[in-house]
Every structure is written in C-alpha cells, then in structure tokens.
Image (cartoon, helix red, strand yellow):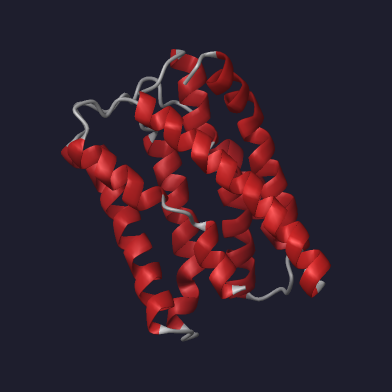
Length: 200
C-alpha cells in the first residue's frame, strides 16, 4: 500500500510551486485547495515516524511535504497581493467536517494512524473542489491550470483502471481507496466536458 500511497499524491506540490515561482499571473490557483492537499500529505505521511520502507520512499514523502507547505506559504504570504482571495471562497468546513466524521466511521482499523490515513484518502477525493469551484465562479482559468486539472483527472481515471487490473491479477481490493478515487474522478466530469467543448 505504501507505493500506492505515494503515487496517489501525484505531483500537486511541485507543480504549483513551479507555477507560483515562474508564472506572471497567479490568480488562478486556489489557496484553499492547496491547504487541503497539504493536510492530505501531512496526515498520510505520518508513517515517516513509525515505518521505514526505503530511502526513496522517505525522501519523496519529505519532498512532497516541504513543497506543499512552501506552496501554501507562497500563496498566502509571499504572493498574497496577486492571490484572488475574493473568488477563492469555498467553505472548507463543508468538506472537513463530513470527511472527519466518515474517517471515524469507515476505516480499516480504529487506530490513530489508520484513521488519519483514511482521513487523507477521503479528503484527497474532495480537495480539488475549491479549485473547481473557483473556476466555475470566475468562468475562466489560466491555460496551464486547466491543462493541469485535465491531466490530473485523467490520471485519476487511469488509476481506477489500475485498481481493476490489480483486482483481476492480484485479487487486491481496497474499498476505501477505490470508492474515494471514483468519487474524485466524478467531480472532474463536468470539468472534462468544459475542457473539451471549449477547446482547452
């Protein structure tokens, strides 16, 4: 599960950090989505303190965490004057409260680390909603942001195909991860439609 956990994180922090540093316009990034993804990585990678898998695994997790926190810092501190806080208005408690409750009710085992891992899986499935809400509210987004969201959604769809393959070849099935991944992919469907019809 550890390799899958690391892969599930995709490249959110590194992409957005590069975008913030080198893009002339940073208004299209949702700081609230970045806060949620940072919380996802933080709660998911707590096993850094309890389990050693490999040097590569440890280094990549640390890089993800560092990039995630630097990204949030860049948005809310260094580049706060160019950050579109007015349109980044999604209420995070609408996601955090039900996700927290669900992670206590549905998990693999009722232990602190397992509940936090489950919380990270559930939260990741909805963490992109503030970004999608921001795009729907403004009606526009930077081209690089829309391309990123498209390929992120495509990545999630391919991940579902990977789960199907593993089920038939390894008899492996993680209901929490699969259901959360399907939910996350569904959230992208409307964006996919707009992306294709508008020729993004």
